Figure 1 (tube, one colour):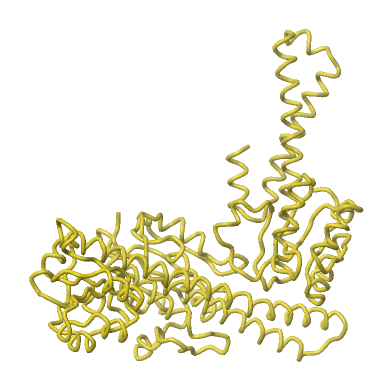
Figure 2: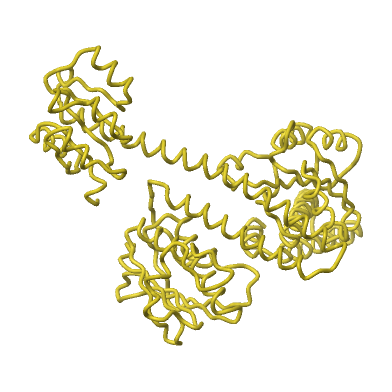
Length: 189
Length: 326
């Protein structure tokens, strides 16, 4: 996967000590921003580009649920991980988030969850690009004979890129530390 | 169904038999309200009572129990009686002169009252669990965060020790929440692939080995609780035998009547095998004494039995029997 140093994580938790510890865990690998309320987090998101939001579910004032509903409505394209002290219930099915962590969260658990969320995003981006290229490949191969296409330098590049992407997708899937997730993506792919 | 879970009928025994037949469940019968009060326990599923004081007095009964009560005045009722009974806490009031098939109508009222009472208990457990979860885990998170921030600033063995204490508290809270979950009143079972649950329950990040020795069957269970049972057995093996332990899972009997979880650790001496299932019993400093108690609780909820023997390698072997194999 690409270098993580250029990724920005927004941490939102009303407990200052908790937010600072998340910052400490993530600081070596990611750029971090900390906010202590849902409202401040939304203002931050309006002004700055972030790649992932780590948000506490129960906060005074604006809850984490409301924050991620806004993010969903605004169709913002980044990963969201919800952190909460309450065990997940069936309602998380409808929750627009990419990960769910139950407090207390250790450094290893947090780093694994963030890494996994970024890997999923990377996988989704790869699949979107792969589908685009495959579509073009299908159109061209139905329009022209293989002899006509063989001599086309740009078509050869397209074929190479598709092969490269297949290898990259397989490598990304293998990179998931969770074997169940790898199996699920392998089935999809 | 144990006697203590049976519904109780206060009134004519002939009607009790008819309602029992319609319900497919036998009633315990008390001839008078006074006799009923002595038989009431927290596990009485439901009480059906006539109202013909002083022998049968639904108000006296309603005052002495929190179990769901269905009031059926066999000589016919009045709207005033209905209002008073419902205000006094009756789950249902049924005037038998207003229905064609009295046993069937009472049986339906009993089923409804039991289902409502169970749903009420589950809702209260869930609410309590949510409160415990939030009010205890949030300060644990704050404490852990504080320890990690302090460790980044200074080096002290005391910080490690406090950190370990907090981890033990965290484990204890997890166990308490599991216990609340196990205590829920209804268990809905279905065919569950035992091997898949064994693999899901095996702890991540451990150097211990898992060996599945037989083709594991599909068992009648509730998946989440079965996984909890296996997680606790695996955690127990790793906690007591260390990270080098090999845990074996296989079937008991031919044809299979259960399954076992065995390890090659130090084992459990014979005179402690009953004790380990008691709440709060532990022989390890880090243990909460709840893990194996929860195992037995879950097994009982499924109608299974758990026994401990020696494994072939001298470790502990937990044998789960009377399992409904599909």
